[in-house]
Image 1: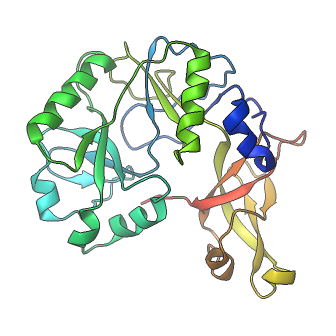
Image 2: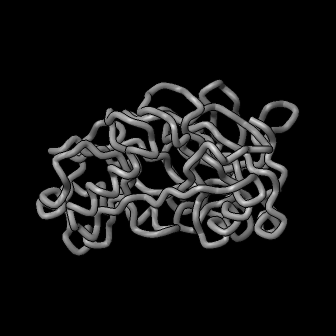
Amino acid sequence: MTKSIGLIAAFALFLFLVPAPVLHAQPPAATGALLANVASANIDPAPYLVSEKYDGVRGLWDGQVLRTRAGNVIAAPAWFIARLPKQALDGELWIARGQFEKLSGYVRKTTPQDDEWRQIKYMVFELPNAPGTFAERYEQIKRIIAQASFAQLVAVEQFRVTDNAALKRKLAEIVRAGGEGLMLHRADAPYVTGRNDALLKLKPLDDAEATVIGYVAGKGKYEGKMGALQVETADGKRFQIGTGFTDAVRANPPAIGTLVTYTYSGLTNSGLPRFASYLRVRDKF
């Protein structure tokens, strides 16, 4: 991956200067197209349909059962399931920008709460194994959802962007409003699985996962709480994450062995993430 040119400490400046975007790899999902391990400072968006990246819980609907990307059944209310079409769908369960933790808590419950699920939308972005190009599948998604006439079933808006400068402006607009980033899906792409360049994720900062292997005790105002997490990446690199925590997380940090997601701004010469900041526990369910 190329280095992101903004620093976490100067992230607010990104919203005004809008540095060249960086594309990031995403771990394989249970099904559906994968994100390519591509980095580029000058993306031509012309071949792509672009959408907001929704930071939700992946929901895979096979026409009968709603599952996570790990294949676990999601205990959605019967009334919610009954309104979904008898058509395989792929999307994100989502409440609003910045509401991932609340959403995750709702979706994880084995006994769903109606008042919670009435806040959740199923944001559909793909039709698994459907024929045609992505642009054609998008039109089909809109027709399917219009026919379903269910307010909580939403087609993720796909739009065209004329050039790289316009793409940067759109990214800045989404991030400024509290969004996570953008997705770029080649309009001419068939439905494919496996690593490919048909689907790209565009964010202002890199993110990755690491496993918690220990703790550093807090000092000063954090005395008696966790000061930093000691973590290890899949390839054996060890480092500490000392920022990004709420007081609640410092008081009750992720357990040893937990996989956590962190953001960072490029790599040091030794290959360690620069300015690593805790984001959340990695959602594996």
